[in-house]
Length: 201
Image: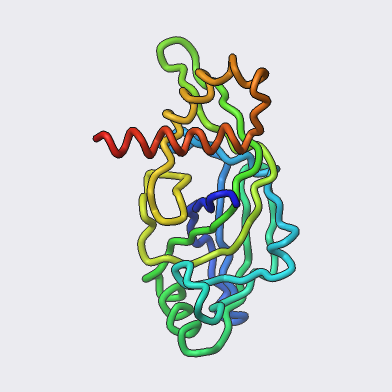
């Protein structure tokens, strides 16, 4: 099973009368970790059958809200969350309503990826692009994102080194045709390289 990833977002608007919050859960901007999520590539089919919203990714408690809509725009994925009324949901609702909680996070499975060059000359660099088939699992409100400068994180909180993965992809490009690696196999190889480099530091 693919490793789950996290993406962080933010609260855009609060509708107190209907207990609803509009949230940007993902954007297509190039992040400081050199990762990009193509917003047109989201797979929401399974999520929309059970559109749960959790507190801090805790799937052992009741959902605190549900996503009544998930809209993919030109450069962002926007959701509208409607809060439940049980005690924990009420606590989080009041914290969001008062501005004490403003961060969100989604967990998802990666689909297809590719490495692209952006910029020109000395400023050119490789970025890791999640192109399509990224499957949304759940949305959460979180007190503090694990790494505010990182767009993509492993589900347990570790960084995905997009630069190291990009280099791995470039090095493996020549042998890909011979080994017929799938996009996920190349992605997993990037994780392995990152973990190895981190262990040596």
